[in-house]
Image (cartoon, rainbow, N blue to C red; front, top):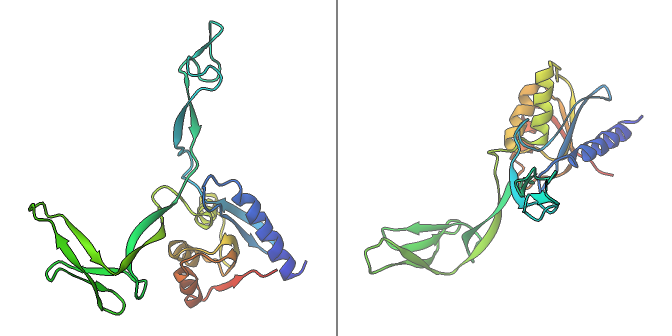
Length: 227
């Protein structure tokens, strides 16, 4: 097999493993290979043994817990069933940005003025409430912007899972290649650098690229796969 064929096959495998993820927005898969052989895999998810549930009314007994005078087998008489929740490690957050530069705003509570963080022009002012509550409202030339915030508190990324599995099993990663469906974040990139992985191939580029830049500076060969 050619290098291109190996890369394509490994990334297809990573895509298959990504489907095992319970994350809602981004299902990511990773494969670590040495000499064209897979030695570790991973996908993004919670630590082993951790499951979040949501409760729903049992559809078999309609929440009564009994069917024909017998205890419902599905909910075991509770009338409620627990279903594993899908993970949403990325959440939307709204923030105010200036209309002039689409940049963050700076609230100066001493002067009661609002500035654009990029061009530093005044774009508004702070109007304090008259009831001594400390509340105030912002008036000016700005708008609301939605952005995705990643919650790392419960989720382990695919590449981290693959590296940690190899560490647990005593599998050395020096000189290996990591194939991943989404380019690594800065935290995972540090782990990749320290693990001895020497090449990273990815399909899609993550919105934050500092991890890619860090790996390149540390001598790791980083490539985006092109069909």
